[in-house]
Image (cartoon, rainbow, N blue to C red):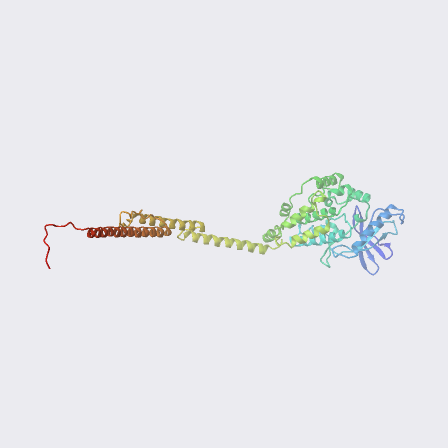
Length: 446
């Protein structure tokens, strides 16, 4: 640790924590044994007035950054102060000191190379909350990477750190990214110096990819310009390696087979979320941290989505389904052995109609075999034999026959009466005619 020196009144520098292209982070101590982290910007500001462009940019960006603290978030480091160092005239930001390892350290031995799904989803939620908090007040981070997210051992929260790029000008940011930025985590558009809310979303997706697969999609081999350019071009043009295969290859040997099986059950909504974050075109990503957080909460609470860490439940469900399938197969086997034929309702109805029709046909045939009854009263009673008609037609025909019979009887009676009357009239006529005198007859005396 370097020699202690004063950064500003009441704030001492206890030594460098980390050095990078955007500046160095030192452990600071405030009066009263309050520890803090101090971000020093490498571009000096010699004149502290609005005529100095660097000072003006610094003031503007720090003004935006101070909005982050207006409503503090447990997942965003708190800004304690900012200003210009007394020696060297370097801009600085003083932040709270987070005691605990960063994500990069948690992926190194003796830790496992990949995160368990339960802890990974926790990181995803905390980091999305941090981005939503910053974007809500108009602050873009611009340098999200695994060693800028720390685990607070006192609170159990994951905290987003280091807003160094957020307070740089576009020109400073472009130069810093080109020579010292973490190109493995940077969005394609950041190669041109652009920094959008969607750029933070892309870097967020790279972190989740790294926690899932055990490495970033396009690792940097060395720190040469050639290596950096290769990684930047890959972000712009190359397809992402299959993160599921990477995770499978990096499963720790110390895990049991059950744990390995459980940890390979990655929720579909999580894979879809990472895929959308890592789209090449910013327009195809989530608009900002706010929409990202909404999608994450919606996916994790979805009824369709299964918990990533519910191996016991999943195995029980699988065994249940297997047992039910065996029971159904046994039932089907028993049903197949039972005598009888299973008919659908339509086929059954058709058979009933066919049977009724057949019965009617047989009845009709039997009816045709019977001799029709002969009723002869007079030659006038010449009736057509009764045909196979409906009940109504049969009744009608019966009434017609009865009327014909009655007419025939009446005709016969009328004929008999007329004949009798003719005979009677003839006898009367014969009795009224004068007899011819019989001359041979002798009168009889009294």
